[in-house]
Length: 330
Ligand code: UFG
Image (tube, rainbow, N blue to C red):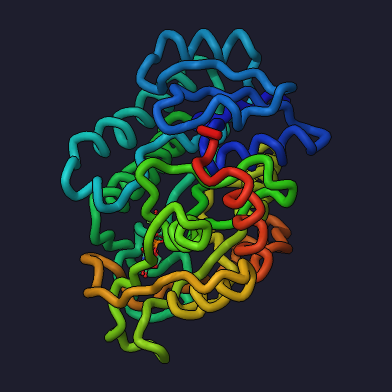
């Protein structure tokens, strides 16, 4: 079956493209406008179509020409901070862009979509671990756009018989073991890549944003999930839809929380480098604790995360960063 992967040249997309290509049932086709994705992350044996999700006529042409059976949709803007200062970009790229994609799918009879959602849809949780039916009260524009898209997909399911799986990721990190692809954002805002760039001397220090949270060591707890486990979940989710599964939402996390200090200490140990750490004020909008319950995904899809321990996450991310200090630019 042919699967169109929008944003397939991005971080999670490029790992998922490899998982699809390795599966016996799916052939990925990457659709990416390369605004943040990297051409070099697309494997040689996978076709890259440079296109925009706003371009409905072109999307329809591609969906028909490549006889696409389902879409895995990553293409989006995903910086929480930027979403608060430039909401128009997020409503345009994420909400309107996905609406265009859904229209193109509907008009060409492509019914299955696996969607890249986020734990940011929950906002500040009342308790943890977070289950899928907890209240969704996003505290930033990015999370609001992803929640709107989930609702759009629900309405397309209701009215047009489409079906979707929304995957709400917690903190995606790590890289493929051979270090050939990895995380390369500009600007980079995520903790683990910033730590590793500090370890290799590309940055002067790593800042800890807030040491007065109500957590054991005062820094935020996050649930880190290896990108290879995320990639597997997308393949299973597409298989579930192809097999007739009903539209559904899953959390994807490791179900364990690690503090910012713990991640920094672990990274010092793995890299063997004692880099500079500075304590700073809280970053606006960071919840103290975000830990997933992923029981539902394990039960329904039979998903078994195999790489999501902080050791393997940091080691594989380090493989990538130490060989590519400037990402795909080198
Ligand atoms: N942090 C630092 N210093 C840094 C960068 C991050 O202390 O230089 C801290 C943050 O304050 C936070 C933790 O490290 O406590 C993790 O921060 P990230 O930016 O790596 O990730 P977030 O938890 O903020 O965000 C991630 C995804 C978002 C998604 C969110 C869902 O990147 O896209 O999880 O909760 F919306």
